[in-house]
Length: 107
Length: 116
Image (tube, rainbow over all chains, first blue to last red; front, side, top):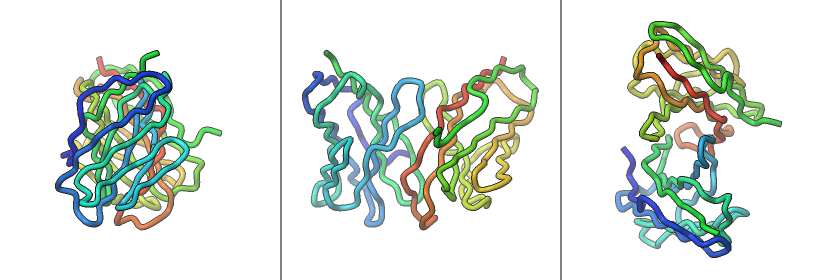
C-alpha cells in the first residue's frame, strides 16, 4: 500500500553527495514525508521528515517540492556505512514501507 | 543504553508450537508497534499500542496476540506456528504525541523467527 515511488537501486561514490529521489504524487495535505533506512540485518533507522519546508539535520537534508508531489533526500558526504535500503514514506498515522532504494556506496 | 530491545534475537521452533517475543523500550514512549519483515524484505505493520491500548490492528491471523503489561513493554505471542510465520519481527516505539498521526519511530534489532 506504499504511496511512493523510488528507484530500485543506485550507486554512489564515497565522499560524494547522494541524492535519493521519491515521487509521492497522491500525497494529501496532512501527510508527512518520512525517510528511514535499513542497514543489512538491522532495524530501520529514522533519518528525517518534513511536511512542506525543506529540513536538515545531522544526517541528511530533505528537499520537498512546492507542490509536495516529490522529494529528495540528500546525504551530503556518503560513507561506506551509508550503504543501506532507504525508504521514503508518506504518512499521517502509520508507516507503510515500500521496497525502498538500495543504495550502495563504493570506495 | 539500548533504546528498544527484543528477546530473543533468534528463535527456531517446530510447526504447531506456541512462542513469545518480548519487546522493551526505555525511551518513555507511549506508543509501541510490531512489524513483520518477510523473505521478500517488505516491512509491514501488524499492531500498534498506545498507553497499553490497541490502536492499529492490521489483517493479522488471530494466532498472533500482542500483550502490553505496561507502557514500556509490548510482547508478541504466536500460537500454532506455521511455516509462513518465518520472518524477522521488529518492535518499535514512538514518543508521546497525537495518536492520530505517526511520529518518529525507533526500532529494535529484530527477532528472526524460523519455523521448521
